[in-house]
Length: 277
Image (cartoon, rainbow, N blue to C red; front, top):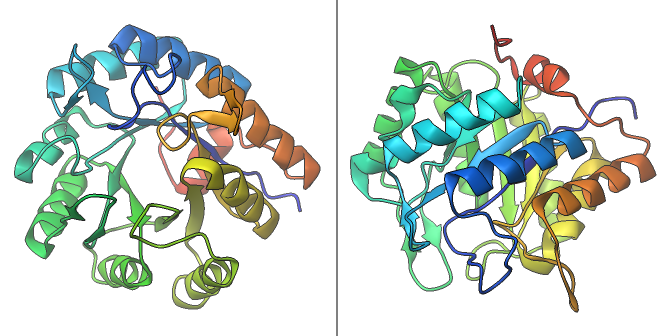
């Protein structure tokens, strides 16, 4: 299989702390350093959250601006993707960083259960976030926690609310949401091929399932996500020493399946993103 595999590194998220793993980057400077190492290891997309000084989640546009500036300086060409997830803020605060015009932003198009609460994505908020992304030229990455989210993303792509080439990420292994199930994964892939054959797809697994979804996605011709947001360990006994270590593990999976790892330029071409400069 000669199609390049895009590796996304989710560096921080909103949940993992330094108590879980000291390598989790919290400050902007830590995040820039961690992304640079991951970029050099083979990641083409940086999926970014920001934190307050005490480690709690934040949606502060000023922090996102400093992070974007640092990544553009130290990781030239890398695709910068901001999170609009609901753990970092509520309502319009979730899209407050979109005027910074990152290359991409995550977009959850439906609600589902999370470990201890409902992850609410009401239709009016989804439509507003999608509208802001159109206004500022930000490409959505659809985070699909359920089959209905794939169908909704396709509908929004067809009616123009999500323009351009659709990019859908299957998220599996969140407690109380979609479990890691190979039949479901295969059906997701077939659904994408049937409803949106020109689209690109990616897969992310949570916790110990990260490596499983990396393997499935790479072998099936998709793209994949790794990083300390989703998983802080290399195995049951070993904490991951860095985001870059998880990226390198994913690169090894690509090599195992004879998949070339996408450069930042190839990733931009595959996703229909403008070249920098």
